[in-house]
Image (cartoon, rainbow, N blue to C red; front, side, top):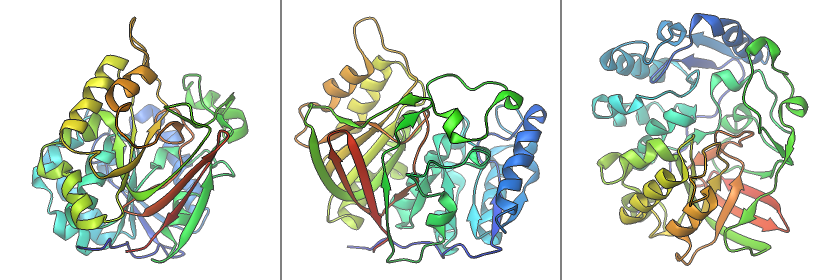
Length: 341
């Protein structure tokens, strides 16, 4: 059994490297990029935006150049924070020196397509990573129920922190940057509550967190980069809590991906499953909830829906590898994460 290693705590004045292992930022959103950088520099952090991160398009550079940039970011930074996700982080997997990244003990933070890289860094090396922020999310303040990613990254190993479920979520599409409110009270307008798949009012679960964006991490199942059963065997004797969120796939695709993960053994050692909200459409004969029910309804573990992660924000920082206690009482949820080996 191998314990979890936690990155070196982020210190005041720490260097934040911003590479683009998936997509960069096009010219028309550079104003938002500057605002995101300012929100971190105003808090005393040294933000270094790499050249590729300011280039739009499907990818900003070749896979080889993006890999080189990522390696250099880990060597130079106290935290690595891509601008956002994208589509093709999968191109980098077999070219990354995972042990070299882990040896730096640098925080790797992100979500969406970045979870394609977060998950294998944790499962292959045992280094904790953080799902739940990208640089371009920074202009909006975190809900008071959540910690900021910088707060979590500053905690030493052995720390614990609690977060509570958010009372509201974002339901409408994002507008032009100039028209967006910069405070969560205005950006998050629709009431939300965690709930269980089986309709139980109260539930609790404990285990080590592992997961990410369903569309991208499901591609890793059955490969060395997504061997969650081996991670559970080597790093999670307590069992796992698998968290997943669909970026936008329809309900049939979600059902297929969840079944694929089940066939790959992702839920064999799970003590519970956390399903984030999605903007993905229902099909004519299958809702998003029914997709989860058909895939996981007969697995004898609790499943929580509408969890605060994913593409229908807000989303809370979740540390891959951390031991977590989740409780749901009458729709009000909480999660306490323990940064313990």
